[in-house]
Length: 190
Image (cartoon, rainbow, N blue to C red; front, side, top):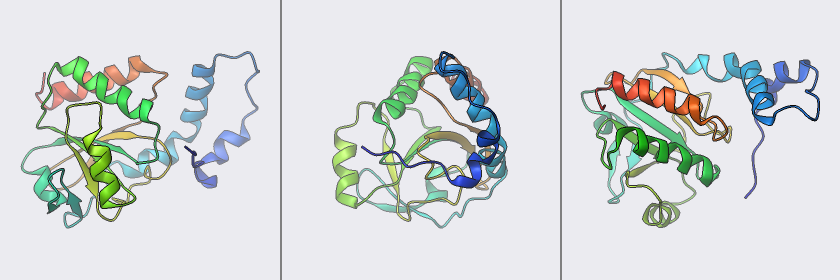
């Protein structure tokens, strides 16, 4: 599997800082480099209005408008790409299951892009978690965070506004659990 680098403009702040010593804690180095680019990655998506006409492919091979999937209540979206690290994706969905102790959560939508419809169907059959996965037809919602090889979470309202954007790192389980706990209380899941 190959990893796509973040866009050059998002790395400007990270390149300006001196590199951490080689014996530094890799998790701390990851956090430091992430917070250097946080404003250009996360903040532009807060308040972004998604197109309600975007088509979504359901696990049962139907195409529906994204707004129909959202419905009347706020939803937590876990957005990842088909090329993202499987361990990263599985670690987030395992945390969801540990925190909620539920195999079905109406307020959670797992959303991915895909190479082909066939590829999506095959991957959907062999997933390691109980949550249904939906595919973007156009492969993008228009968010800054997309196509950066970083799975991310966000809340979307019935009027299709994005809020509470979060990037989970498998190396920082505690922050992911804190975020999910907060969001699931906010959504009245737990």
